[in-house]
Image (tube, rainbow over all chains, first blue to last red; front, side, top):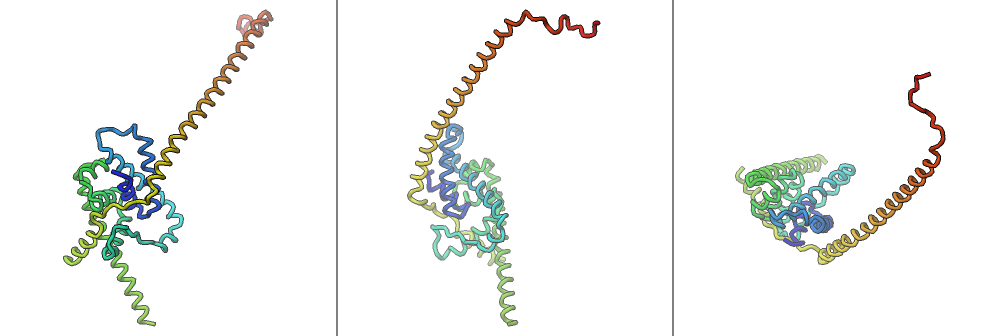
Length: 172
Length: 92
C-alpha cells in the first residue's frame, strides 16, 4: 500500500487527476491524524482503502451538489476520462465503461472498482466495504448488469440521434 | 443477443486489471509538508489553550478576592437593624 495505490483508487472514482491528487493528500493526513484509532483487527491497507473510498464518495457527492446548481453547463461539457494506462485501441470501450460507472450506486461502484478494475481479492473488498463476501459478489453482478443496461441505452440513444440527424439531412 | 453479450464482455475487459498510475512526483513531498504543518498547528493550539486557561484563572482569582472583600465589609455593617425580624408578614 503506497501513495500510488491511493491515488489510483481516487482517480477511478473521480476521473480527474487534480481531484485525485487532493484526495490522496487528504487521505494521508487523515491516516496521520487518526492512526491511534486504527484497530489491529484489520489490515492497515484495508483501513487506508476504506478511508480512500469514503473520501472519494464524499467528494463525488459534493461535486453532484454543485453540478445541480450548474447542471446545464455540466451537460454541455462532458469530458471523457483518459486513464493513463489505457492502450489506444481500448480507449473508446473504456470510456463507455467510465461514463456508465458514474451512474452506478455507491456500493456497486465500489465493488466494481476494487474487485474488477483493481483486481483486489474479494475478501479484502468485503473487509474494505465492511460487508460479507457474498454481498460483494452480488454487488459486482448487479454492477455489471447495470453497466450493460446503461451502455446499451446510451448506444441506442446515440443511434436514434444519428437517425434523426440523417433524416434531417435527407430532407434538406 | 449473443453478439451483444460478446460486445459487452469485450467492452468490460478494456478496464479489467488496469495497472496503478503514478501520481505527480511532488505529491509525496506535498503530503510530507502538510503532515509537518499538522505537527506545528497543535503547538500553536496548545499555546492558545494555555493563554485562555491563564485568563480564566486570573478572572477567578479577581472574582474570589472581590467576594472576600465584600463579605468583610458586610460583616462590619451587620449591627444595623434588619428589615424583617421574624418573617411573619401577616402579623399586625
